[in-house]
Amino acid sequence: MESTLDIFVKAIFSENMIFAYFLGMCSYLAVSKTVKTAVGLGAAVIFVLFVTVPVNWLLENYLLKEGALAWLNPAWAEIDLSFLAFIMFIAVVASIVQLVEMIVEKFAPALYGALGIFLPLIAVNCSILGGALFMQERQYSTIVDASAFALGSGIGWFIAIVAIAAIREKIRYSDVPAPLRGLGITFILTGLMGIAFMSFMGIKYGGDEEKKDDIKAVVETSVNSNTINE
Amino acid sequence: MSEVAEKTKAPKEPLFSKKNRKLVTDPLTDNNPITIQVLGICSALAITVQVEQAFWMSVSVLFVLALGNVIISMLRNMIPSRIRIIVQLVVVASLVIIVDQLLAAFVPDVSEKLSVFVGLIITNCIIMGRFEAFAMGNKPGPSFMDALGNSFGYAWILLAVAFFRELLGSGTFWGIEIFGSSIPGSKWGLYTMGYENNNMMILPPMALIIVGIIIWIQRSRNKELIEDH
Image 1 (cartoon, rainbow over the protein chains, first blue to last red):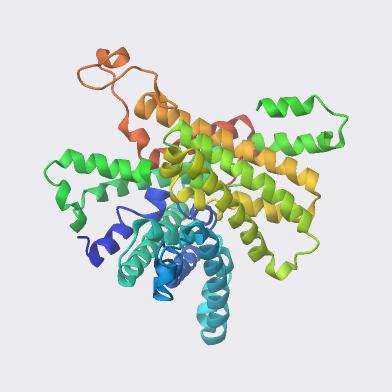
Image 2: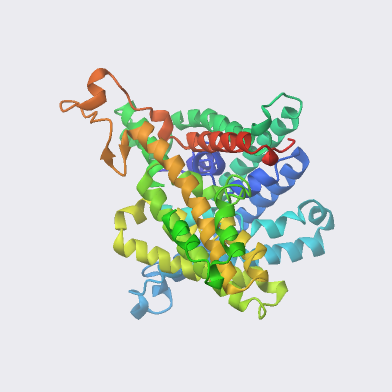
C-alpha cells in the first residue's frame, strides 16, 4: 500500500507537475522571468491546489462517482454522474479562486498584495484542474491522501518555477544564440531540468513492492506510466 | 493543410476574403499559438509520444476551439464582462464533455491513453486565449477562421513533435514499424545491424527540447521574432 507520505513525496519529485506532466506550463513560462514573481505564483498555486483538490475529492466521492449518491438514497446507488466531472471541477476551481481572492483581500491584505494579481490567472492554470483530474483518475481512498497529493503537487510546481526563474535571471548574462533567446532557451532548460528530475524515479515507494523482483520492470513501467498512459 | 489550400481557391465568398485567409495562415507560422503566443503548451507536450494520440488531440482541440469560438462570438454582446471567464469556462467544459464522450465511444484505446489530457483542454490556454483575444470582439465568421488557423498551427507543431518522438523513440509511425522490429527472436530491418531505439525520446523532457529546437529554427529564419531575453 502507498502511504500518505509516499503520495506526498511522489507528487513533489517523480510525478512533478511540470517535469513529468507539463501541467501549468503556460503560466510557468510567462511568469518565470524574476524569482520574486515566481515565488508569488508558486505560493498561490500551492494554496489553491490545497484548497480545491480536497473539495473536488468530496464532490467526486459523494456526488459524481458511480454509487456515490447512495448516502442520500439507496435507490440512487446506480447513478453515475462522472461524465459531469469536468464541468463540476472547473466550476469549483473558478468559484473557489474567486472566493479565496475575496477572503484574502479582506483578511490578509499583505498576502493579497503578494498573491493578488496571480489569483485570477490560476483559475485557468492547467495544474489546478490537472490536480483534480489526477485525483479522480487515481482514486485516492481518503481525503487525507488527496490533500497530501495536492500539497505535494503544489510544492513540486513551486520548486520548478522558482528554479527556472533563478536560472533565467542568471542566463541574462550569458551569450545565448539570438534565435534561442527567451522562449527557446527556457524550453530547453526545462527539458534538461526534467531529465535531472527523472533521476527521482529511482526512489522506491510503498506501492512498488510487487515490482521489486525485476529492477528493469520497475524502470519500464514507470517510464510507460509517465509517458504513455498518463 | 489541404483545407487551407482549398479555401484560398474560393476568394469570392466573403468568409474567405483576404483578411480572413490571413487569419488562417498567420497562426501557422509567424503567429503560431505554441511557438510564438506560448499558448496550450501543457497538453501539447504530454501527448506527443505517438502520432496517433497527437492526431486525436489536435482533432479534439479543433472541434472545441471552432465551436467554442463561434458560440462565444455569437454571445459576445450578451456576456457581462465581469463574469465572462465563468461563461467561457462553462462553454468549453460542455464542449469538452462531448469530445470526451465521443472519443471514449469511438476510439476507446486512444481515449485511455489521453486520459486526463482531454479534460485539460478546458484549461488549455489556446482556447481561453482565443476567446479573450478574438471571439469576444469579432463576428462568428472571422472567429471560426481564427479558430481554424490556430488549431492547425497547434496541430502541426504537435504532429511534428510526435513524429520525431515516435520515429526515434519507438521506431514506428502511427504504430507501423518503420525501422523493422526489435523484438528478440524476430528481429528484422535496421535492428539486425545493431540499431537501437533512443529511449530518451519517449521520456517527457525530450518534448520540451524538440519544441525548443523548432522555436530555434523558426526564429533563425525570421529574425523579427527574436526576443531580447
